[in-house]
Image (cartoon, rainbow, N blue to C red; front, side):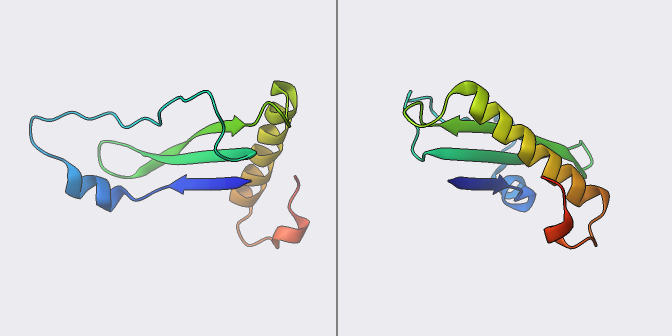
Length: 96
C-alpha cells in the first residue's frame, strides 16, 4: 500500500515560468504500481492559501474490485475528516 501527499506549494512556485502553463498528471498505464495506492494533492487558492485536497485511488484488479477500493477510500476520508475535526484527539480514538 502507498499513501502519497503532494503539498509542496513552495516548489511549485519556484517552477512557475511566465507565459507557460503546465498541467502535471500521472500517466495512465492500465497497471497499478502498488497493490493499493491513495494519492492526495493539496489544492491552493489564488492567494496561495490551502483550499482542500484532491485524491485518487489506484488498485490492482487482481486483488481488489472497484467496490472494495471505493469502500477503503471512503474509510480513509472518514478518518481524515475525524482527524481534521479534532486534531488534538489521539489517533487511536479516531473513527475509521
